[in-house]
Length: 281
Length: 243
Image (cartoon, rainbow over all chains, first blue to last red; front, top):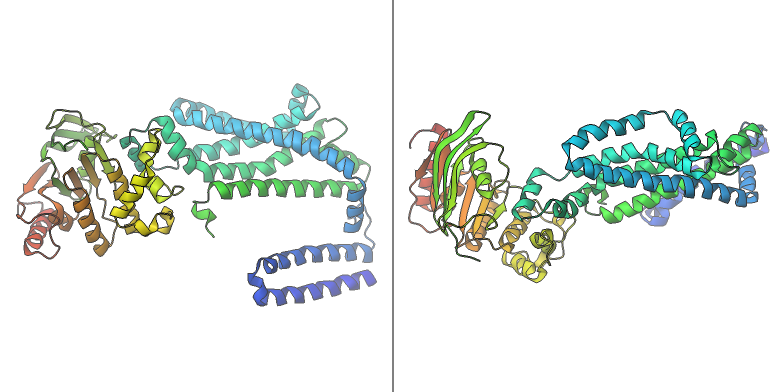
């Protein structure tokens, strides 16, 4: 019961502190802006720890953050190996191939009405296929290693990226294109100097959506066959062994990697589309 | 800049069999401002796009010729109601966009000179988003001047501006575009009365030209001749009958 009491006290103290910070001049500074969300995160962890200990929740239902942290620290080499296998080899290479292919396809589609009529439905069809059906097939085709995971990721990211790129290429107005024409600009110059820059906010929307899809795809694909490493493999086997602390540790890795991936793409976006109203602050 | 040619336009245009205009004849004198005035939808912009060689989405039968017999292509600069500035480029880069689009080296020093000539010398480091609507149209005018073409087509370039800024821009354009053959498409009788050295009013199916007072353009906004002409143009636009 002491643990519960400590958790409740901490919650009350943190709430009081957060209100103080929010109402003080410090809330305008960067440190002040970061302090309140950080306090929220710490409070959630402390209350979680207190509730798990105080109510003696079984580790299979919910391990305490300290247990997860301990497992995380003790299995760093395993987690790192899983991260490289799933994120770097599977998700990242699939992301690059899938988004690159979608971008190239969008430019082809944009050049020809015929391809637009033919390829968009194909893209749509690929996106509508359920991953739990396609993943085992792709594992049969491309083997157990990361290549099949990358293939699943390609399937997952291709369509959202394609739709965004095609939309983006239509973003420049007809009048802007007329103006380019009076400057004797060719198709490729107009594409490079006007339409691709104008398309970038849309392209980056596709890239951002695809970051999380890529990670989910790579993890889920490992459920259908993988070498004895990888985040999805670890999660499915540890669930079978009731090693829920390890599952939580993998979830932590996935959350950290996914957030960092999204953040990195968003950072690049801010540099590239600094001129767009959505980036004004 | 090569000497400004005059332009002759005559012909008929139809959209899917329905005549937009027919038997329309316009003569644009070399180095002069010609105004094409009319209500929305009578085909003014279509005439301008046909001369500019842009897709007009009409069936056109007739001829568009320069008085010196040379082709008009690559001798035309175009300025529209919307400034069409590229938000990711600085002002001098926007002004020099033509060279970039042709794969050449932009002459940024000349672009900065032109920006100073249109009164934006203090804003050279800004991007378009930091400017007001009137300032953005000034940049568009500088971009039009940058191409140094003898024929300038203006498609309601000042109609989105407030009255004062519009008058300022009209003065500036009249000064900066002196000596070029200018076709100004507008729905504003006041604008035509200030700037037109020849004024054609387009009504559905036909065009009528108006005599202009001998006051040099840009005519003062409050000159009795300007106001009288503006009144006659306005009355004609409303009735569609000879004033």
